[in-house]
Image (tube, rainbow, N blue to C red; front, side, top):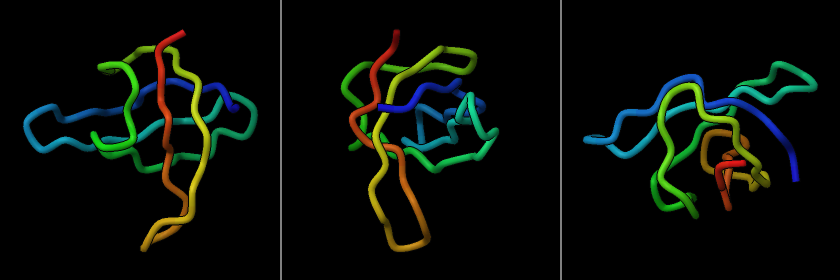
Length: 63
């Protein structure tokens, strides 16, 4: 599991971006990859999975 922060999340559209703490890399996150509800600024734990346009954050939960 990786740790990061929610940079942006649009609840009505169901997607956003998470910035990984170690690398500052940004990953796309979709509502289908969430375990917990998230909002901007939340500290989260997540895994990565290859998506159509690169790596996506999945199994996202607030820590």
